[in-house]
Every structure is written in structure tokens, then in C-alpha cells.
Image (cartoon, rainbow, N blue to C red):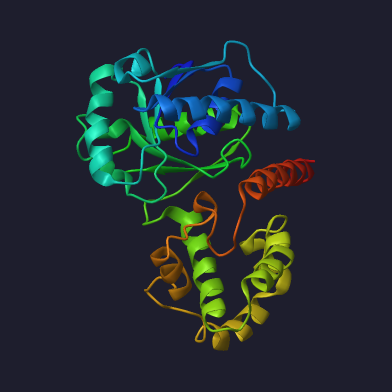
Amino acid sequence: MAEIRRAAVIGTGTMGPGMGAVLARTGIETVLYDVSAEALERAKAGVQMAEGVLDRLEAPTEDGGSVRFETELAAALDGAELVVEAVPEKLELKHEIFPQFEQHVAEDAILASNTSGIPITKIAAVCQHPERVVGMHWSNPPHLIPMIEVIPGEQTDQRVVDKACELVRRFGYHPVVEKEVPGFVENRILYAILRECLDLVDRGIIDPEGMDLNVRWGIGYKLAVIGPMELLDMAGLDIYNAVGSYLNQDLSTSGEVSKTIRDRIAEGKLGMKTGSGIYDYTPEQIDQLRGQRAAKLVAVRKALEA
């Protein structure tokens, strides 16, 4: 397979602009597609913001990269050697769009999904060439988190996996190849942490502010430098065995979503996008928080890569 020079990101949403900016920075002619012209206008601003962050990261730039915006799917897919699907997390929607990809791209084009947990084998089931479908799960924000999960389905060709990993390394990120499992690895770890955090809040053991401080300056600060498997060795496997033998029995194993979350959803409090969730936000606070968090993530990434 030749080096990828043309890519299409299908669906802008929250991650499309950042992915497009990263791909373009790597010398790839990139098209961002969305059915909504309004969404594409937001995506243009998102790409500009992501490009500014990449400048602050001093990310290298290859010649030939560009970003353009399309509301016609055929035009977006024309000549694409890589398609990155980033539509909403509904299997029926992905089943509708993947066969359309195959109608417009060459047989050796890679069809990647940015799904955060739908099995790749299920997505590829409607394709004539399921061997070229692969998961490429970016972390949000995609222009800041330099790790991508690469997940083959049952019929994915190994050459497609290798090509996806090669591309990820090309723009300076770390590919992590995984076997299919619901939610994939990153979200499984994240949701296990969130389940325990919410259980402790639900039970009144700690309030949300205290929880955020505890995790941010406890395990969060530590795990950014020392991975969980490394942490086991550092602490001592015997210590983990001793504590885990009683603590594991007391950790939340609930299969239900937290009452804290369900109650807020019932009240229409969905988080920053509605101005209220666990916390309350004004539009000015949201803009300020986004800027502050981007600056901190830039600083942390530079420190970790030093």
C-alpha cells in the first residue's frame, strides 16, 4: 500500500475538526464532510482552533496538506485513500454509510471508524470488503491526545492494520493495537473509574469537587507519568495482592448507571452543552475552561514528550 495522501473525515461533530487538522498537518489533502452546512461552518472554526493548538505544540508540518469542506458525500470521497467515519454512535447509521463509502473509493482504500465502542466486525458486516475496515479510535480532543486505538475486526487484513499504525506514527502519535472488546480498552478503563467515582458521590462519601481534586492530584497526576502496569511493579505486586484481596470485594460492580447521572438527565442537565450538569456553567465560563484546559494539556504533553 502506498503512502496515504488523500483522506476524508465523514462527520464533523466534536472530533472531526481536530482529526482533520492533524491529518492535514501530516501532508494529507483532507476533506471534512457533513450533511449540515451549519455544522461545517462550526467545523471551520474548530479546524482553526486545532491548528492554533498544533502550532503551540510545535507539531511538524509536511508539505501538501490541506483541509476543505463538503456537503456532497461523493465529492468528499473522491480520490480518498483513507476514510475516517465519525458519525453518531448508532450502528444503523454506520450500516447506512459504509456501503456508500465502497461505492465511491478504490478497493484498496482504508475504511476506518472512530467509534468509541461498537465492534468493528459488526460495522464491517454490511461491507463487500470487510477486510479493509478497521477501528481508529482517537481520544478527545484529537489534536491534543497523541494515542489512537487501532482495532481490527474478525476479517480485517493485517496489511490494513499495519498501514493504519504506520499513518498514526507518521503524525507523531502512538498506535495501540487491541483485540475487539465492547468499549475498547481506553473507554473500559475510563468507565470503570467513573463508575467508582459516581458510586462514592452517590453514597455521600465525597462531593464532586472533592472527587475531582482527589483524582486529578492523586492517580491522575501519577498515571500521566507511570502506567498502571508500571505502577504495580513500583508499588509491589505483594502490596497490590494484599490490598486487592479485601478492597476488590467492596468496589462497585453495579450494572446500572449512577443515580446522580440519571437524575440530572431527567432535569435536562447534560453538562457543558446545556450549561449545567454536575456543575453549572455560563457561556463565558465554558470558553474560559476550554482555553485553560487546552493550554494545560499542551504543557503536560510537552513535559511528557521531553
